[in-house]
Image (tube, rainbow, N blue to C red; front, top):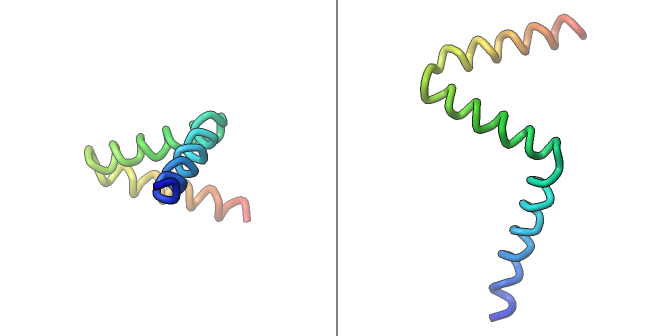
Length: 60
């Protein structure tokens, strides 16, 4: 019984730690926004990807 509860508790603890950190919260929000954009208009996501890739390539 205690063994089956352990992974759940650990998972919840890790998720809570990620959620409470600012960067973790930011990443979660970015993922949510990207998923919503993906369902609304996929072309926007592809344009964002191309734009980010071009910025990264220009820095390298």
